[in-house]
Image (cartoon, rainbow, N blue to C red; front, side, top):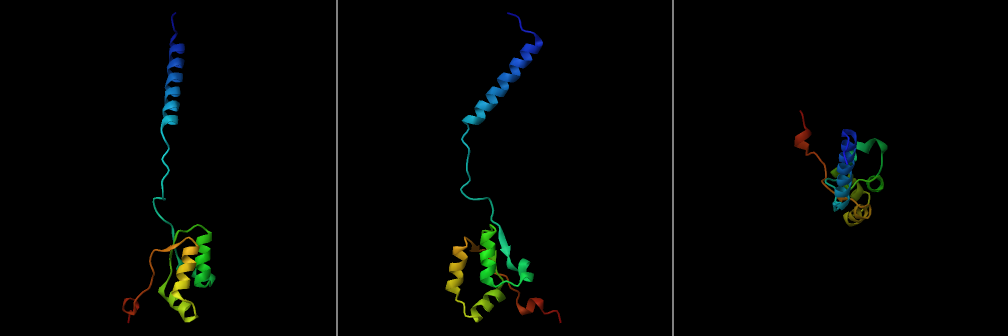
Length: 113
């Protein structure tokens, strides 16, 4: 039986496609155990909304952030208003977050006089 060039190319293309699909199906799909990096909310980016620190924590967890960077002055204000650091930690954990850092500037950094 003699094959035409068209039949040969069609058969070769079908064979190559079939082999590629079969190979891809046999390869186990790896599922990463953790994302390659975390998304973190710097709370100053929503300062204009005038939220309390607990509200910022709830919001960050609700919208999918995995970390939070509160400002030290927000933490200080939370404690001055009667909140405890133990309660703050629980709120952060319950929201599925972790504190990546706390942001603050010492007076000597911002004193331009």
